[in-house]
Image (tube, rainbow, N blue to C red; front, side):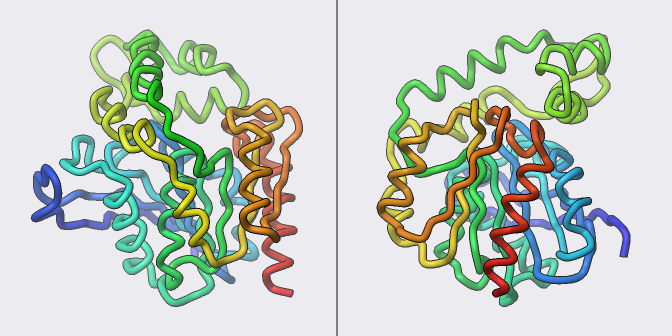
Length: 277
């Protein structure tokens, strides 16, 4: 089966600030074998995973989706809590028949935090891969930092080349540029500043170590050599859950899955082979 796209609808009636159903844009890369469900980071999009998905297509069923508030999914959902993002994982897993199988959740940055919390639902989480993501916090400065980062985008970008350069060039720059859409005067983001700032409010106010301590499945933690995740956080994760596997991606930053896809694939493939054994 080739790559196909679909929309999953999540009803939000009764949710905090609910504004009706949320539609999630999903990409099913096909493939045979145990499922991988891929969760991108804040303000990103599921296309970031295309290169990694292609490497796994011969051995795994690979599904990715745009998080609520991002990409082609509902841009202004009423609820952007971590609990809402976890509900989305459950809904997508159900839609694609991943629940009850050996599904591995793979998340980068905020997607990784969603995956960590979704691990409380073992029917959709045989194992976890957390890329530049962990339970540390609280981070009171994070909403201001995210707002400032989004404010720095020179919107509209005149063309894809300018966007790629702004986002640092290379595979990561191309992936971020690919998340933009044409509009008046050039290319525009598919996220709204206030929605993204609201999405990180929980991180500003709390840590997630208690959730980490409740994780029961095997975990691979991947951090970029030059990433945002501190080595001490990964080490503390392993100290609290012995057996946690840690991989460091040479030369990679926060977008390790883009900066060095081959190395991330190598770490994941070794971890997944160990699971099968």
